[in-house]
Amino acid sequence: MNQIDFKEFHWMVSMINSIDAGLVVLDNDYVIESWNGFMYHHSNIHAADAKGKNIFDIFQDLDKSWFMRKVEAVKTIQNQSFITWEQKPYIFPFKNYRPITGTVEHMYQNVTILPLPSLTGSIDQICLIIYDVTDIAANRMELQKANSQLEKLTKTDPLTQIDNRNGLAVNVDLANKRYKMQQTVSSLVMLDIDHFKQINDTHGHPAGDAILQQLAAIIKESMRENDSVARYGGEEFAIILHNTTSDNASHFVERLRKAIEDTEFTFQETLIKVTISFGIAQISTKGGDNKAWMEAADKALYQAKRQGRNQGVVYESMD
Image 1 (spheres, rainbow, N blue to C red):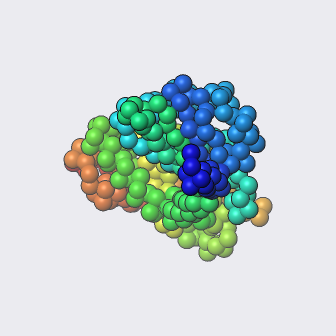
Image 2: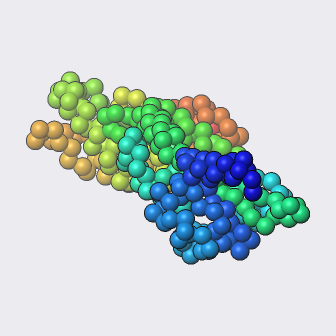
Image 3: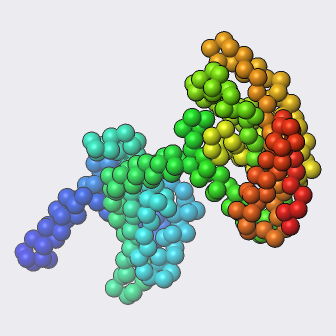
């Protein structure tokens, strides 16, 4: 090696050890042949101690079968491969020391796997390049979390903490899609507090709010986990009972009606009598018409009110 070649080699080694990315070269037996400064600083394993060791001996939690499949694929097609943090948050369990994302425990990593051809064209080594993308990952996850919370707020009634009208629309649409795809029958129950205006006028709007909150809690306790409830507006609620015919929904409604009638609703130590009227509609065999389904349950609800309230009515002619 002449002086110019030596200087270039020296610069190259210096750059490799200084770049803000991990660089590891492995042979066909996954033995480490190169280990740069980034790897040393984050693993606390010096290059002299890493070289000649099997990568799986140093990182014993590394998923061996998964990693070998990735590497062998690169060697077979002789083309680079990328592993993003969305696919796998990290390959090497390095701690995160960045001040901006200090609450994140591990370093999030993007990894490039490169085949290194020999002079004869065979792939005898592969190179791993590890990029610290913790800032990007943390910011994106925070944004996703904020968007998720915002989406939840747009579908949640602030008073009762159950779904609002928007949330109901989503669940009605999902039930209709399930019916069209799987013929899964659901029933929609619309319910309304009888004489709610009188409760507000007599006891005040704070009392009315307390009644709405207590009623929402009773409904949630009465439902199965896969059913859903929403505050449709004012004193009106809607329940979607999945895998439930209108006949079975009628039994559910009667149990709920009786439970509410027997409940002692209270506000500031004042007992308030509450009864509910219900309208029940089974999903149409035509399917897909969200508006028609909700209108059918609503018509049944108003029929229950016309018949004297504190009862449930099934809509019979939706088809």
